[in-house]
Image (cartoon, rainbow, N blue to C red):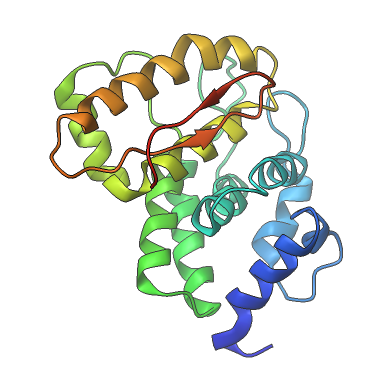
Length: 211
C-alpha cells in the first residue's frame, strides 16, 4: 500500500463493513493501535475494546469524526496509569493521542486539513463540559476545535461516553446542555452553519443546519 493511497484505502475498508472489522485483521502495520489490547481502563475494558466500540458508533459520521474516534485514546499506552479513582487514570493522554494522530495520518498521506481537524478533536476530547456555559469559555472551545469541526467533536464525545455506565444520564446532564450553549453562541455568529449529529442513544436526535 503506497503512502498516498493509504488513508483512502483505510477509510474505504472501514466503511465497507463495521469499522472495527478493518482492524481485527489489519492489512497495515499499526503498532500504536495493537498496543491498546494490553491496556485496561477503569471499567475493566481494554483501550482496544473501547476504541472499536467508539468507531463502530461513528460508522455513519464524517471521515474526520471516524478518524478522531480511532486515535482519541491511543496515547493511553504511553501514560503511566494512576490508580487513585478520584483522578484521571491516564493524565495527559489527549495530547499524547493527538501526537500519534498527527504522525500516523501524515504517514498515511492525509491532507494538512484532515490532520489538523482530527488532532483538534483528539486533543480536546476530554474537554471539561461540566461547567462550561460562559460565553468566554465557549468562544475558546470553538476556537480550539474549529467552527466547522463542532459537529465532529460532539459525535466523538457522545460515542466516547456511550460505552460507560450512566452514559444516558451524562448525556442529559452535560452533553445536551453544552451543545445547546454552543449552538446558541454559534447562532450569534453571522453566516455560521449549525452543526448536527445523531446521538447513539435511542430516541435522542439533535441537529442544526448542515456542517
